Image (cartoon, rainbow, N blue to C red; front, side, top):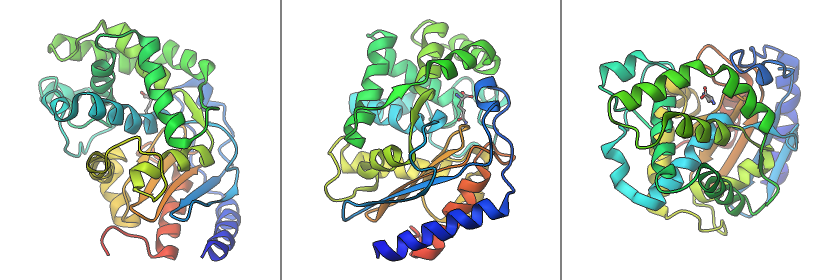
Length: 305
Ligand SMILES: NC(=O)CC[C@H](N)C(=O)O
């Protein structure tokens, strides 16, 4: 199976590069806007412990919103179900940084993967500790999950978003005005921006997702019942207003980031990380989505049987 998959990934890498319809990198974070969109990497961590790769699988990229899965995992580990008093768990059908939605819902974000929702989970994690300790908790979770200590924050990306992240500044202040923020807006925002700026390779990210996929031998960083919840949320909310399209085309839970990464989970079978920095209209990676669709189809992986 590994050999067939290895051959398939090499073919996929070639097809994606030949296709060339890369999309455009995120333009609202200057450091990300500079990245060449014509890049592609994929890593598949399998139940037998092996990791099969192709393309730029060892190149570091900004995981951005994929970090929201791991910050939520930390919050679920810390306070469990209580988080749902502050944030919902429904698909948003709106842009990831929508202010309108937050106003309509009186400051309770629709789900933990849109920006407003992730600001709330970050705020919860920050409560009673410093931003530095909060970031250490998230990074240590990732390092333990990937069994790799070489995972860090890209300070240049964090700085770049700090200088231009006006919408998130608006959202965090808006949350405060509704009484759904425990800490100072700038502290919560700064912590959020820094965990979004964690950089990882596809290999590291695929390995970090093994516990969420419930793969045998994965480090036990999250209880299986909580991992199931993360999968449900990734399926319904992981790609913002493109979540329905992603579920329809791929049939697996996934989480995207504006750095162009996607973490894709085939429960009990594989944890997959795909990266290509050009985005589609929803702010999800254009070519990583296509690759996810082709991989799921080739392997017959779907949560729908
Ligand atoms: N969709 C994303 O990856 C967004 C994350 C980015 N840090 C932001 O807050 O805008």
